[in-house]
Amino acid sequence: MIGTRGRQLIDDLFELERGFWLGGEDYFLGSLDEKCLLVFPQAGEMHGVRAREEIAQTATAPNRWSDLKVSHRDLIRPAPDMAIISYRADVLRADGEPYSALVSSAYVRRPDGWKLTFHQHSPL
Image (cartoon, rainbow, N blue to C red):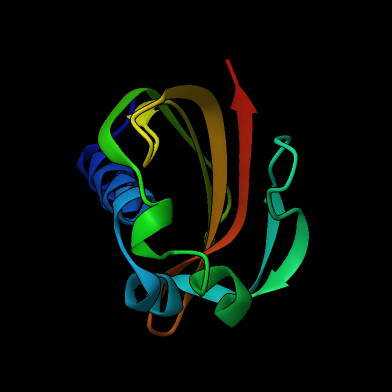
């Protein structure tokens, strides 16, 4: 059973995660670790280890999502300063096309807060 502190961490990390779907370049710059491993199976998407600045440049208005719905939230803490979340995302692409995926993200705690260091999509 997850205690109050565990529920708070889940809520905090999922709020951070929400920003990566709906936020812009400044949000990305403040919330990504220095480097991040991305795993996107769609053709043309970024894949591999990328610098924070390179990833942030992709968070522009024409590429943003809307109507995000998150379900099936899970969290594991393999180390005190690391957390991995997974969930189902149902969202609309910028062109209005629906998109559903199982998503995993890993966060590392830095002196200035939790930072995204890994992000993966498995489309449904």
